[in-house]
Length: 325
Image (cartoon, rainbow, N blue to C red; front, side, top):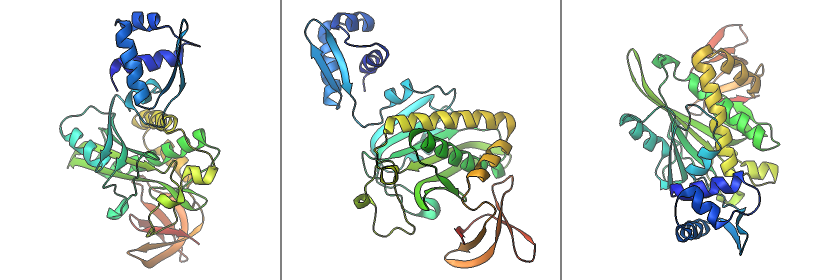
Protein backbone atom coordinates (compact mmCIF):
# COMPACT_ATOMS: atom_id res chain seq x y z
CA UNK A 1 0.00 0.00 0.00
CA UNK A 2 1.24 3.50 -0.83
CA UNK A 3 2.43 5.55 2.15
CA UNK A 4 -0.10 8.31 1.41
CA UNK A 5 -2.94 5.78 1.46
CA UNK A 6 -1.65 4.52 4.79
CA UNK A 7 -1.77 8.06 6.16
CA UNK A 8 -5.37 8.43 4.98
CA UNK A 9 -6.31 5.22 6.81
CA UNK A 10 -4.60 6.51 9.95
CA UNK A 11 -6.61 9.75 9.77
CA UNK A 12 -9.86 7.80 9.30
CA UNK A 13 -9.15 5.86 12.48
CA UNK A 14 -8.03 8.77 14.63
CA UNK A 15 -10.69 11.34 13.70
CA UNK A 16 -14.42 10.93 14.26
CA UNK A 17 -17.02 11.19 11.54
CA UNK A 18 -16.42 12.43 8.03
CA UNK A 19 -13.15 13.98 6.90
CA UNK A 20 -13.31 16.58 4.17
CA UNK A 21 -11.24 16.27 1.02
CA UNK A 22 -9.78 19.68 1.83
CA UNK A 23 -8.60 18.47 5.24
CA UNK A 24 -7.05 15.32 3.74
CA UNK A 25 -5.40 17.40 1.03
CA UNK A 26 -3.90 19.74 3.62
CA UNK A 27 -2.70 16.92 5.90
CA UNK A 28 -1.02 15.01 3.08
CA UNK A 29 0.24 18.01 1.15
CA UNK A 30 -1.28 16.85 -2.13
CA UNK A 31 -4.12 17.98 -4.41
CA UNK A 32 -7.78 17.04 -4.01
CA UNK A 33 -7.42 15.05 -7.24
CA UNK A 34 -4.56 13.04 -5.71
CA UNK A 35 -6.72 12.37 -2.63
CA UNK A 36 -9.48 11.00 -4.86
CA UNK A 37 -6.96 8.69 -6.57
CA UNK A 38 -5.79 7.33 -3.21
CA UNK A 39 -9.41 6.82 -2.09
CA UNK A 40 -10.11 4.93 -5.31
CA UNK A 41 -7.01 2.75 -4.76
CA UNK A 42 -8.15 1.94 -1.21
CA UNK A 43 -11.59 0.98 -2.48
CA UNK A 44 -9.98 -1.30 -5.05
CA UNK A 45 -8.10 -2.96 -2.17
CA UNK A 46 -11.39 -3.77 -0.45
CA UNK A 47 -11.92 -0.75 1.83
CA UNK A 48 -15.51 0.51 1.98
CA UNK A 49 -15.21 4.29 2.00
CA UNK A 50 -18.34 6.43 1.89
CA UNK A 51 -18.26 9.82 0.14
CA UNK A 52 -20.91 12.45 0.90
CA UNK A 53 -20.96 15.88 -0.83
CA UNK A 54 -20.15 18.78 1.51
CA UNK A 55 -19.20 16.34 4.31
CA UNK A 56 -16.27 14.34 2.94
CA UNK A 57 -15.17 10.74 3.35
CA UNK A 58 -15.78 8.12 6.02
CA UNK A 59 -14.28 4.66 6.44
CA UNK A 60 -17.13 2.16 6.81
CA UNK A 61 -15.26 -1.16 6.81
CA UNK A 62 -11.87 -2.70 6.06
CA UNK A 63 -10.94 -5.92 4.24
CA UNK A 64 -9.77 -8.96 6.19
CA UNK A 65 -6.16 -8.46 5.19
CA UNK A 66 -2.78 -8.16 6.88
CA UNK A 67 -1.26 -5.01 5.47
CA UNK A 68 2.08 -3.89 6.96
CA UNK A 69 1.01 -0.25 7.22
CA UNK A 70 -2.13 -1.30 9.08
CA UNK A 71 -0.14 -3.59 11.37
CA UNK A 72 2.46 -0.91 12.03
CA UNK A 73 -0.24 1.57 13.08
CA UNK A 74 -1.24 -0.81 15.88
CA UNK A 75 2.21 -1.71 17.17
CA UNK A 76 3.54 -0.39 20.47
CA UNK A 77 6.62 -2.59 20.28
CA UNK A 78 10.19 -1.33 20.44
CA UNK A 79 11.97 -4.09 18.49
CA UNK A 80 9.58 -6.59 16.95
CA UNK A 81 8.07 -5.01 13.84
CA UNK A 82 10.75 -2.36 13.27
CA UNK A 83 10.63 -3.52 9.64
CA UNK A 84 7.62 -5.24 8.08
CA UNK A 85 7.66 -7.15 4.80
CA UNK A 86 4.45 -8.50 3.29
CA UNK A 87 3.85 -10.83 0.34
CA UNK A 88 0.57 -12.07 -1.08
CA UNK A 89 2.11 -15.48 -1.78
CA UNK A 90 5.49 -16.93 -0.89
CA UNK A 91 7.00 -20.37 -0.55
CA UNK A 92 7.95 -19.88 3.11
CA UNK A 93 8.14 -16.83 5.36
CA UNK A 94 10.93 -18.58 7.27
CA UNK A 95 13.01 -18.89 4.11
CA UNK A 96 12.36 -15.26 3.25
CA UNK A 97 13.27 -14.07 6.76
CA UNK A 98 16.41 -16.23 6.76
CA UNK A 99 17.58 -14.62 3.50
CA UNK A 100 16.84 -11.13 4.81
CA UNK A 101 18.75 -11.91 8.02
CA UNK A 102 21.75 -13.14 6.02
CA UNK A 103 21.65 -9.85 4.12
CA UNK A 104 21.79 -7.89 7.37
CA UNK A 105 18.12 -7.24 8.17
CA UNK A 106 17.62 -5.30 11.39
CA UNK A 107 16.56 -7.22 14.49
CA UNK A 108 12.80 -7.27 14.76
CA UNK A 109 12.21 -7.59 11.01
CA UNK A 110 8.89 -9.39 10.42
CA UNK A 111 7.91 -11.24 7.24
CA UNK A 112 4.17 -11.71 6.72
CA UNK A 113 2.38 -13.59 3.97
CA UNK A 114 -1.24 -14.07 2.98
CA UNK A 115 -0.47 -17.58 1.68
CA UNK A 116 2.45 -20.04 1.56
CA UNK A 117 3.10 -22.69 -1.06
CA UNK A 118 5.79 -24.50 0.93
CA UNK A 119 4.89 -24.00 4.57
CA UNK A 120 6.85 -26.29 6.88
CA UNK A 121 6.14 -27.75 10.27
CA UNK A 122 8.29 -29.65 12.75
CA UNK A 123 10.41 -32.50 11.36
CA UNK A 124 9.78 -31.40 7.78
CA UNK A 125 6.02 -31.87 7.95
CA UNK A 126 3.79 -29.82 5.66
CA UNK A 127 1.93 -26.83 7.15
CA UNK A 128 -1.27 -26.13 5.21
CA UNK A 129 -1.21 -22.43 4.28
CA UNK A 130 -4.30 -21.35 2.30
CA UNK A 131 -4.79 -17.68 1.39
CA UNK A 132 -6.88 -15.12 3.22
CA UNK A 133 -7.66 -17.01 6.41
CA UNK A 134 -4.62 -17.49 8.67
CA UNK A 135 -1.45 -15.90 10.01
CA UNK A 136 1.93 -16.87 8.59
CA UNK A 137 4.86 -14.85 9.88
CA UNK A 138 8.56 -15.07 10.67
CA UNK A 139 10.59 -12.76 12.90
CA UNK A 140 14.33 -12.03 12.82
CA UNK A 141 15.99 -11.81 16.25
CA UNK A 142 19.66 -11.37 17.13
CA UNK A 143 19.94 -12.19 20.85
CA UNK A 144 23.32 -12.21 22.59
CA UNK A 145 22.96 -15.80 23.82
CA UNK A 146 24.78 -19.07 23.19
CA UNK A 147 23.55 -21.47 20.49
CA UNK A 148 22.40 -24.08 23.03
CA UNK A 149 20.07 -21.45 24.53
CA UNK A 150 18.28 -20.72 21.23
CA UNK A 151 15.45 -23.25 21.89
CA UNK A 152 14.35 -21.00 24.75
CA UNK A 153 12.93 -18.65 22.12
CA UNK A 154 10.58 -21.38 20.87
CA UNK A 155 8.94 -21.45 24.30
CA UNK A 156 8.82 -17.66 24.32
CA UNK A 157 6.98 -17.75 20.98
CA UNK A 158 4.48 -20.27 22.31
CA UNK A 159 3.64 -18.06 25.29
CA UNK A 160 3.19 -15.04 22.99
CA UNK A 161 0.76 -16.96 20.76
CA UNK A 162 -1.19 -18.21 23.79
CA UNK A 163 -1.52 -14.66 25.12
CA UNK A 164 -2.67 -13.37 21.71
CA UNK A 165 -5.34 -16.08 21.46
CA UNK A 166 -6.68 -15.22 24.92
CA UNK A 167 -6.76 -11.49 24.17
CA UNK A 168 -8.54 -11.77 20.82
CA UNK A 169 -10.95 -14.65 21.53
CA UNK A 170 -12.73 -16.22 24.50
CA UNK A 171 -10.64 -19.37 24.11
CA UNK A 172 -8.04 -20.74 26.53
CA UNK A 173 -5.24 -22.54 24.67
CA UNK A 174 -2.84 -25.13 26.04
CA UNK A 175 0.75 -25.66 24.97
CA UNK A 176 2.01 -29.09 23.95
CA UNK A 177 5.74 -29.67 24.30
CA UNK A 178 7.67 -28.33 22.59
CA UNK A 179 5.94 -26.03 20.12
CA UNK A 180 2.24 -26.71 19.45
CA UNK A 181 -0.77 -24.70 20.62
CA UNK A 182 -3.92 -26.74 21.30
CA UNK A 183 -7.60 -25.96 21.73
CA UNK A 184 -9.54 -28.88 23.22
CA UNK A 185 -6.69 -31.21 22.24
CA UNK A 186 -6.61 -30.06 18.60
CA UNK A 187 -3.68 -28.21 17.06
CA UNK A 188 -4.37 -24.56 16.26
CA UNK A 189 -0.83 -23.19 15.90
CA UNK A 190 2.71 -24.37 15.36
CA UNK A 191 6.17 -22.86 15.67
CA UNK A 192 9.31 -23.52 13.67
CA UNK A 193 12.48 -21.74 14.72
CA UNK A 194 15.69 -21.79 12.69
CA UNK A 195 19.12 -20.46 13.52
CA UNK A 196 22.42 -19.30 12.07
CA UNK A 197 25.22 -19.56 14.61
CA UNK A 198 28.94 -19.89 15.22
CA UNK A 199 30.58 -21.89 18.01
CA UNK A 200 30.66 -18.92 20.36
CA UNK A 201 27.43 -17.15 19.52
CA UNK A 202 24.30 -16.69 17.45
CA UNK A 203 24.16 -14.69 14.24
CA UNK A 204 20.36 -14.69 14.20
CA UNK A 205 17.28 -16.75 15.03
CA UNK A 206 14.15 -16.93 12.89
CA UNK A 207 10.91 -17.37 14.83
CA UNK A 208 8.39 -18.98 12.47
CA UNK A 209 4.75 -18.79 13.59
CA UNK A 210 1.67 -20.23 11.93
CA UNK A 211 -1.79 -19.80 13.48
CA UNK A 212 -5.03 -21.19 12.06
CA UNK A 213 -7.37 -18.26 12.45
CA UNK A 214 -10.36 -18.58 10.12
CA UNK A 215 -9.87 -21.90 8.31
CA UNK A 216 -12.97 -24.00 7.73
CA UNK A 217 -13.06 -27.80 7.99
CA UNK A 218 -12.89 -28.23 4.21
CA UNK A 219 -9.60 -26.30 4.04
CA UNK A 220 -7.66 -28.79 6.16
CA UNK A 221 -5.77 -31.61 4.39
CA UNK A 222 -7.22 -35.11 4.73
CA UNK A 223 -3.90 -36.70 5.80
CA UNK A 224 -3.20 -34.75 9.00
CA UNK A 225 -1.16 -36.70 11.57
CA UNK A 226 -3.08 -35.15 14.47
CA UNK A 227 -6.46 -33.39 14.82
CA UNK A 228 -6.31 -29.73 13.79
CA UNK A 229 -8.67 -26.81 14.17
CA UNK A 230 -8.90 -23.04 13.85
CA UNK A 231 -9.91 -20.29 16.21
CA UNK A 232 -13.00 -19.74 14.05
CA UNK A 233 -14.07 -23.38 14.30
CA UNK A 234 -13.59 -23.41 18.07
CA UNK A 235 -15.16 -20.04 18.89
CA UNK A 236 -17.80 -19.75 16.18
CA UNK A 237 -16.64 -16.20 15.41
CA UNK A 238 -14.29 -14.95 12.74
CA UNK A 239 -11.00 -13.56 14.01
CA UNK A 240 -9.81 -10.12 12.93
CA UNK A 241 -6.49 -11.09 11.35
CA UNK A 242 -5.09 -7.58 11.62
CA UNK A 243 -5.93 -7.37 15.32
CA UNK A 244 -4.50 -10.83 16.01
CA UNK A 245 -1.27 -10.07 14.15
CA UNK A 246 -0.62 -6.80 15.95
CA UNK A 247 -1.54 -8.31 19.32
CA UNK A 248 0.86 -11.20 18.78
CA UNK A 249 3.75 -8.97 17.74
CA UNK A 250 3.19 -6.66 20.70
CA UNK A 251 3.15 -9.60 23.13
CA UNK A 252 6.22 -11.11 21.51
CA UNK A 253 8.04 -7.80 21.87
CA UNK A 254 7.19 -7.55 25.59
CA UNK A 255 8.30 -11.11 26.26
CA UNK A 256 11.54 -10.69 24.31
CA UNK A 257 12.42 -7.44 26.10
CA UNK A 258 11.88 -9.17 29.46
CA UNK A 259 13.86 -12.20 28.27
CA UNK A 260 16.88 -10.03 27.44
CA UNK A 261 16.83 -8.56 30.96
CA UNK A 262 15.70 -11.47 33.17
CA UNK A 263 16.58 -14.53 31.10
CA UNK A 264 14.52 -17.66 30.51
CA UNK A 265 13.09 -18.01 34.03
CA UNK A 266 9.85 -15.98 33.68
CA UNK A 267 9.09 -17.47 30.25
CA UNK A 268 9.74 -20.98 31.53
CA UNK A 269 7.36 -20.48 34.48
CA UNK A 270 4.50 -19.18 32.32
CA UNK A 271 5.05 -21.86 29.68
CA UNK A 272 4.84 -24.61 32.31
CA UNK A 273 1.60 -23.17 33.73
CA UNK A 274 0.09 -23.36 30.26
CA UNK A 275 1.46 -26.81 29.32
CA UNK A 276 -1.18 -29.53 28.80
CA UNK A 277 1.11 -32.20 30.30
CA UNK A 278 2.28 -30.41 33.42
CA UNK A 279 2.51 -32.96 36.26
CA UNK A 280 0.64 -35.62 34.25
CA UNK A 281 1.59 -39.07 33.00
CA UNK A 282 2.76 -39.07 29.37
CA UNK A 283 4.19 -41.33 26.69
CA UNK A 284 7.01 -40.02 24.53
CA UNK A 285 7.57 -41.63 21.14
CA UNK A 286 10.22 -41.13 18.51
CA UNK A 287 9.49 -42.00 14.86
CA UNK A 288 6.21 -43.59 15.91
CA UNK A 289 7.71 -45.97 18.49
CA UNK A 290 6.67 -45.48 22.11
CA UNK A 291 9.87 -45.49 24.06
CA UNK A 292 9.45 -43.70 27.40
CA UNK A 293 6.60 -43.24 29.85
CA UNK A 294 6.52 -41.22 33.04
CA UNK A 295 5.45 -38.06 34.79
CA UNK A 296 6.02 -34.77 32.98
CA UNK A 297 7.89 -32.59 35.49
CA UNK A 298 8.63 -29.61 33.28
CA UNK A 299 11.47 -28.27 31.13
CA UNK A 300 15.03 -27.39 31.94
CA UNK A 301 16.98 -24.25 30.98
CA UNK A 302 17.55 -25.59 27.46
CA UNK A 303 13.89 -26.46 26.93
CA UNK A 304 14.45 -30.21 27.23
CA UNK A 305 11.61 -32.23 28.76
CA UNK A 306 12.12 -33.55 32.28
CA UNK A 307 10.39 -36.91 32.75
CA UNK A 308 10.30 -38.93 35.98
CA UNK A 309 9.80 -42.67 35.38
CA UNK A 310 8.45 -45.29 37.80
CA UNK A 311 11.94 -46.05 39.07
CA UNK A 312 12.18 -42.34 40.10
CA UNK A 313 14.93 -41.75 37.56
CA UNK A 314 14.77 -38.31 35.94
CA UNK A 315 15.12 -38.41 32.14
CA UNK A 316 16.04 -35.45 29.97
CA UNK A 317 14.37 -35.69 26.55
CA UNK A 318 15.21 -33.36 23.68
CA UNK A 319 13.00 -34.69 20.89
CA UNK A 320 9.92 -36.81 20.35
CA UNK A 321 6.14 -36.63 20.27
CA UNK A 322 4.28 -36.41 23.59
CA UNK A 323 0.91 -37.97 24.36
CA UNK A 324 -0.85 -37.31 27.65
CA UNK A 325 -2.21 -40.55 29.13
